[in-house]
Length: 397
Image (cartoon, rainbow, N blue to C red; front, side, top):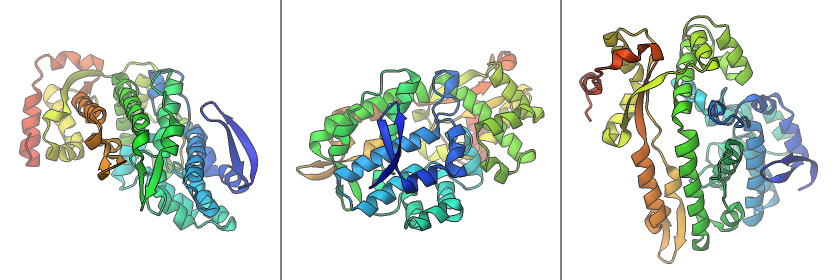
């Protein structure tokens, strides 16, 4: 590949760009994600966590190129993989995953939106002009295609970059991951990306880093509260004051400005975040105690449960929030090459099994409320609302 430009990155050093990649970077879609924070409202807890989806995308592209070289992919396949890695996050809404609920309410995901942008905008024109198929690149972003697992799988270059990058910006010592050993210890088995047994320890270190980052950074209680408030405000705006198509074009600055001037609930919540008058935790319970089959319905009917609690306690609507954590942990399904064939890492590694169990045990379902309403929860009986959910939803704990 012929490189025409290089940029400096605090994580990977010098990242080189080809002419097609430079053209893609100059599009409005990639420029937009310069203004979308990688970790939503994490900066409220870790002040230096202001890195963006843009630099993360450059990092993922860089690692994808290293992986392609290691696997000795054809030059064209490497070009496709790097393009997909560069473009994989252009569909993110403002504040990254903080917008996921708003996207899901419309049946969208950031991967699906990235795919649409890749195939239907100026990005598609550039790809076509450079001899790359927009449909093929979009497929890689969605996890489809011969080498898609390099970008979208249990242990992929996306996770490798964000764990090291986020640890660096958070200022925590959990990002000591031997990326080279992991990359050079992988191989393709059909369409699967698998780990050679000799690199098992390096992947175990990655899993340790992953657990510590989730426990102390990604699931920090203050971050969870602030993002739950912010998501509620986004939902209220999309119902009355903001068109969905307009929302998708926004970056962080656009959305915060609109919220600060929206009036009503959204402006009130944004003011609380600006002045750090955040909601407080009034109830928490381990998610393991909630029947697994019931959890999706609990998420689906969250607003109904919140409104029931608020009505019963005489609390203004929107001032009670139910927060249900994500429980998927695909990293523990990573395939490892053994003498007996391919096995999941949690089948061959005692450490992986322990980490998986520990992570599940720490997940908590929480209820938050505005500070002025805390006295109303003095005799709060959460079981009453669990019973309400059971009765109304036809499920049980």
